[in-house]
Image (cartoon, rainbow, N blue to C red):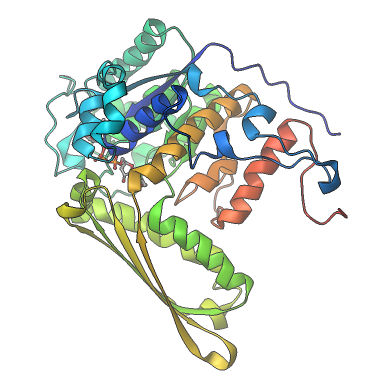
Length: 435
Ligand SMILES: NC(=O)c1ccc[n+]([C@@H]2O[C@H](COP(=O)([O-])OP(=O)(O)OC[C@H]3O[C@@H](n4cnc5c(N)ncnc54)[C@H](O)[C@@H]3O)[C@@H](O)[C@H]2O)c1
């Protein structure tokens, strides 16, 4: 057996901080509270429900992941967050309308007691929202320091042993990295000059990493996928991951595309459209915010299908993604995919997928898993980008610059499980061995 890492046990409380207490964050928090009081199962959570095979098949070793690696338990979690609109998690859950009142009523008191801290918010980045629970500070440097104070205070007040931060805030307007993002020094200078190119999510990321708190980005905007943040994470020895939770339509895409490729079936076009009526849909109705999401969604197919290696099969694909804000559906998104494929002798075929999904129901267990696995990675002595968590993201970050991250869900799953095996001193399972 290989050497296992020295991973300190997950003792004490783990604070989970979410900038953004909207549909995803409130569904996540309500779900964990319901699960730990025995009212529901944490369905969709790999950390809670998945088993992991160890050694050869005939050994029959197949423990639950949470019994194999020293994860914090759901009982250890305490929740906090910031929001420019939502007063507390109960109100957030009621506004989002994801969970029924009958599921919320018995835990209403606990949800109500999780009160949003005033946000670092700037409407320039989210035109559709009017924030009123906002820190009264104009200097971005002061905003960063105020967030660090919030983090420290939350940790003390809640007697946290450790904390993690998962961005569950709105998608910010599209932006490309600029000079201010190139180095940590330039970024800190930019904070002091309140540089226009620094968005609120970047200020939260800076505050978290500076305070030694792991940061995962659930939205597609630029935050820890910036050279300055990677420099800070290396300096502070903090783990980071991103970006954009892989739920709904992109989850389907990363299930279907690897299957088509495995069978060497060609793809001519993939037209994806969504109707969505929650606040996220409203924010994404603005072209600048949609552009951020579109970039994250469009990257998926090329890295799975490798058109440069298979030009005859995948060299000429029309990939289109649309999101339409349609209030009657609320959080219950409908995602249609029209997929034009071709097979033997070039004969055309079509696949239609109509996924009537619930966005936040799919995203909530991802927040739980990221919080627990980021905390594990930090205790395991990791720092910087956690590529083994690509499984959870639409636009995963690569550890190595200019190398494409893996998008195929099944390869991502193998990478995740083999990382855990390696840390615990178990050999990787390659499925090539006898048995
Ligand atoms: N639900 C999914 O399946 C899914 C999948 C991938 C990514 N996401 C992303 O996750 C994020 C959250 O989604 P949601 O459905 O909960 O959206 P939501 O609109 O319900 O919640 C987002 C919350 O963030 C708050 N917010 C905005 N700017 C903020 C700031 N600067 N600081 C603190 N809070 C801020 C808003 O007031 C809002 O309450 C969005 O960016 C979304 O694109 C969601």
